[in-house]
Image (cartoon, rainbow, N blue to C red; front, side, top):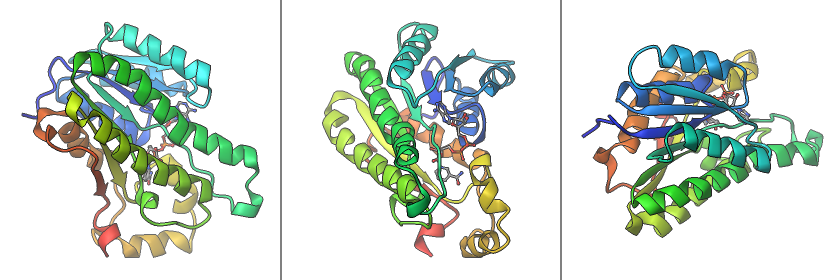
Length: 250
Ligand SMILES: NC(=O)c1ccc[n+]([C@@H]2O[C@H](COP(=O)([O-])OP(=O)(O)OC[C@H]3O[C@@H](n4cnc5c(N)ncnc54)[C@H](O)[C@@H]3O)[C@@H](O)[C@H]2O)c1
């Protein structure tokens, strides 16, 4: 039921952090994986994850650029032999400047990567999945899909939008064999949070509010990623699933 043998996946932003964790989870469950990422780390990650089992490929591309991401998607699709069963729209950026310090261009960059690129990749992947009449799309939401956060106007707006995109698209494609869901991680220990980690005031405040008593790790997302990518979740669509050690319901 959770077996992904023979499935083909694209995971964006998987050279490190949560994306890498989820790509490793899909691969362990049997999927062939393309890591689509702007970073030079992508090649090394693909070699490490693909050292045994199905192939793992690295495709370099800047998701902040419309033309570039279309090219990168086509390259990823070619690597997978023209089929894609699973898309994880994971790549994302945060800009922690206060509203009045955040230039409009910085707002636009967060929106371009976190929501516009995700929408574009849903459309590009949708062309293939609708033809196949089968597919799994997993978007990366956040606690800031539900709450506003602090010094996070662009990020929170983009994560609110991705939750709504997930719900709306799930309705369109539910009858066509495609499930569209989102994972909403809590506070996770990755490089995105290194500034927060170093903040002597906010780090202990955040940690104290997590009922599980610890920050999440990339491994904590493997189970949910495999579940949402597999037949086990075939009647689940439009869900925004918190994986947060209980943060949201405290
Ligand atoms: N870390 C958290 O606490 C947390 C919480 C909730 C949601 N998220 C979301 O999870 C996702 C992954 O976050 P993370 O913590 O692993 O971050 P991270 O910074 O460790 O990793 C982000 C990845 O995205 C890639 N990337 C960034 N810009 C890109 C671009 N323009 N084109 C292609 N790739 C690009 C990076 O190279 C990197 O591999 C993001 O969408 C983030 O918003 C993270």
